[in-house]
Length: 50
Image (cartoon, rainbow, N blue to C red):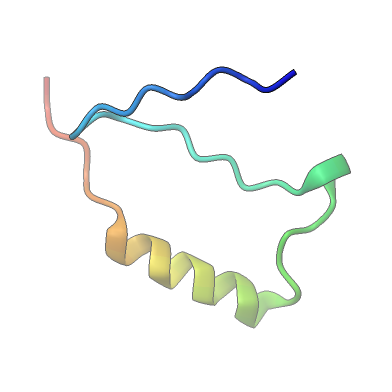
Protein backbone atom coordinates (compact mmCIF):
# COMPACT_ATOMS: atom_id res chain seq x y z
CA UNK A 1 0.00 0.00 0.00
CA UNK A 2 1.54 3.36 -0.99
CA UNK A 3 2.31 5.92 1.68
CA UNK A 4 0.44 9.19 1.99
CA UNK A 5 1.58 12.14 -0.10
CA UNK A 6 3.86 14.53 1.76
CA UNK A 7 2.67 18.03 2.50
CA UNK A 8 4.81 20.71 0.83
CA UNK A 9 4.79 24.18 2.33
CA UNK A 10 6.80 26.87 0.57
CA UNK A 11 9.34 28.16 3.10
CA UNK A 12 8.55 25.24 5.42
CA UNK A 13 11.07 23.23 7.40
CA UNK A 14 11.87 19.71 6.30
CA UNK A 15 13.64 16.77 7.90
CA UNK A 16 16.18 15.24 5.55
CA UNK A 17 17.17 11.64 6.15
CA UNK A 18 20.33 10.31 4.55
CA UNK A 19 20.32 6.56 5.01
CA UNK A 20 20.13 3.69 2.58
CA UNK A 21 17.83 0.70 2.67
CA UNK A 22 18.71 -1.76 5.40
CA UNK A 23 21.00 0.95 6.80
CA UNK A 24 23.46 0.49 3.94
CA UNK A 25 25.85 3.29 3.03
CA UNK A 26 24.52 5.74 0.46
CA UNK A 27 27.91 7.13 -0.61
CA UNK A 28 30.56 5.27 -2.58
CA UNK A 29 33.47 7.09 -0.90
CA UNK A 30 34.36 10.32 0.90
CA UNK A 31 34.57 12.26 -2.41
CA UNK A 32 31.01 11.15 -3.28
CA UNK A 33 29.81 12.24 0.18
CA UNK A 34 31.53 15.63 -0.09
CA UNK A 35 29.97 16.21 -3.53
CA UNK A 36 26.52 15.61 -2.02
CA UNK A 37 27.21 17.94 0.92
CA UNK A 38 28.46 20.69 -1.40
CA UNK A 39 25.35 20.46 -3.60
CA UNK A 40 23.01 20.28 -0.64
CA UNK A 41 24.73 23.24 1.02
CA UNK A 42 24.12 25.35 -2.07
CA UNK A 43 20.39 24.66 -1.88
CA UNK A 44 19.90 24.78 1.88
CA UNK A 45 18.77 28.03 3.42
CA UNK A 46 19.05 28.94 7.09
CA UNK A 47 15.84 28.69 9.12
CA UNK A 48 14.03 31.97 9.63
CA UNK A 49 13.47 33.05 13.25
CA UNK A 50 10.04 32.66 14.74
